[in-house]
Image (cartoon, rainbow, N blue to C red; front, side):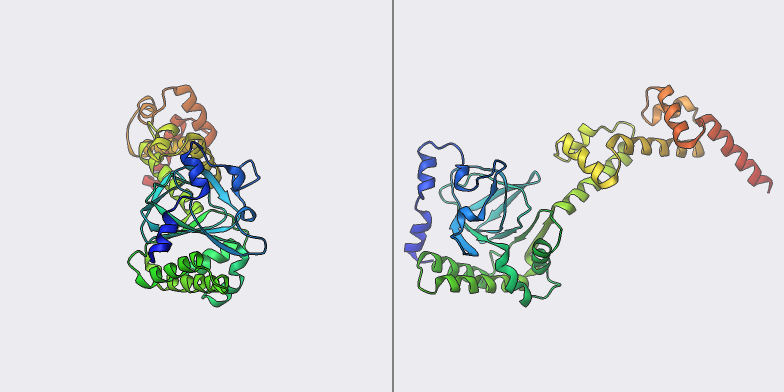
Length: 329
């Protein structure tokens, strides 16, 4: 990279100077007029422009937010720390991440030596590019679901391409066009971004894919495994702590994906275990109640009868009668 461009990237912006002079938090009015911090492309892009590129503001945490555009973050030097669904993602020099407009993320304060380039791209920019791409590649699917379907889950593509010289060269050319503009720079940048997407497609082996929906399903799978194994002592707070999720959030996700509450799932597992023990052991009903983790026998009898239409003792007797009839036959 040319020294004069490097010096421009390192130089403080007006916003960064204000932060260093005591502005303790992000001035949200620079990014949005909405109360819930959805960054507005109209605040960042000149009227009529589909794409712009800017240096990410250093020295301050960007609290949890969304944006109404597609964003690429590129680490020119240093690192970038993002938090998505309580997952910390640390991008290193030369790495790139695509974020769709439904993702909610937080960005930790960058240091002086952390230079991040933000690509701010209105969805319409991809209308032409998408016609040139194979519908089966990862990036096309990312763009198609974001632009042309009702799918509104947060997604990102994380490109670990720091060793891909052709990709690094393309991004360097984009930055040069940005900081040494010519009469054709806007058109050149658009062409270079298109070429960048093509080169990224060629290196799909370097992509880490994330979807909020997939991540949620992973949390549900882990929750079900936990219930299955620790049914006798399981609590929502314990599994939430293990998965590093707030109780209320995990509770909502379980209901969303299973149609049942955590308590209902746990009860189903306890009852299925009770039936399993009735069938395969000679435990007394009192012992069985303790094994599956209930302290109140009256409550256990109540929910068992609601589920199976008979008491545990009646269930066992019926099971024995069936076994006797089968043995006689």
